[in-house]
Image 1: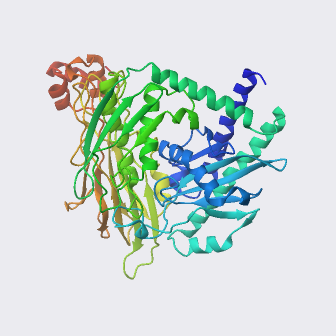
Image 2: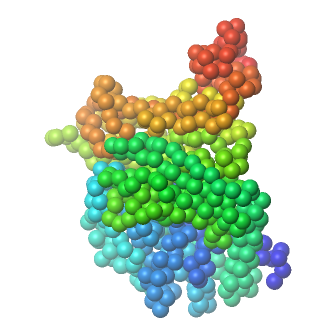
Image 3: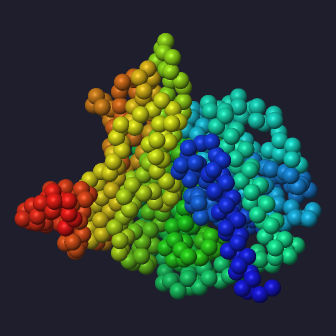
Length: 561
């Protein structure tokens, strides 16, 4: 078969898995999937190697799931794989890092022959236990564990499993609905694959798999070979739970591979912010891949040259039974730590530090004693600012590296008796620089009359804001407090009585380059748009009083300077 035909089929496979992912978005029950895109989808060969991934999804899910299918094959056993089967797990170490992610794998048969697998992952709003938060001391407290097993055996769903799930979670309809959505999206992928194979007259995927993997491997190795063959170290410190955490990393470019080693990183934390290696590896690979080969499709071969190691029982290689519910807090900082080293190897490529981890919180609402309200679990994903890039400003309120979308207020308030009183960009939160850091945002949350709630805070950057690069300034830190002035912690479950609100300010991304080198037109634009205050314009960029007055006059006339 010609190379052109193989390329057409490769593109077709990518469209197949994108439709698979969109089917999950359309049918999922949880807002984290429907609105934020916290999911992944992909197709694999019979050996469990990822051939294509959907564009929709997060690197932590996709790259962790790249390793998961091989675990499914090993646990189920090839002799027990049948047409009509669907497999399930939320194992943090053989899935995507914590119990709140359910991964499902479906073998794909064509004309009675196994030709590959489809896999997908979604974050569910609740999995029982203490709930989604960092308060647990072991994984046993964090919720229901589903080992790799059959959800459906030759088309017959395991109803006993579903009854166990329903009996152990706070939102049974949402969770069971999401499980069926995951199974359905794999089925959509299978149908589209079979249609493609019929159209091209394929009996198996061996030919196209070899084409995809060989071309991806060669293209990636060419990029690595063109880099300076050297090594550098980097590190960063973040808040942690009760004590700060330091991520140390050594990045080494070695001809046909890049080795990332986390020796010297802080040890396992007593609270649930630990990260299994599979998730840390996912973000370390992602960081380097987008820096040197962003246009090469993501698959087993393009990921293979990025090798990641970490000593056992460090916070990026936490072993069972460490608590790992908020493994994303550490995992999302891995790219910034890797970039601190890589910038010394290849300057002028990677961005300044950003907010890093998502600014998540979950609200557990209930009626006050004697009230008639309803209980609900409402999870909302939000973002601080991303770091400035060498040639572009950071993105406002945009999640990097996760890529998870911010949930609309309307969808959040629809999920339960919660009220979002305020949600707007946070002026002056982006670090000053030749390129300005992205802005964080303000949020204020409360409950409807007759309800009280627990807020599970999942924030960082309160004590360690994003650091600038090449002379850029730091971003603004996270703050959180009640509207009556009562202090609140950036992490952990905290009670909020009826009538009270929680006020949060999410962190900004850091700046890149000397602020005095920022073009005057961009400073004037930022001032006119309210991204920076008059005080910051004068202090950070040297704007003169007459220039500030001219901007104010232009804004009053409805013009942009």
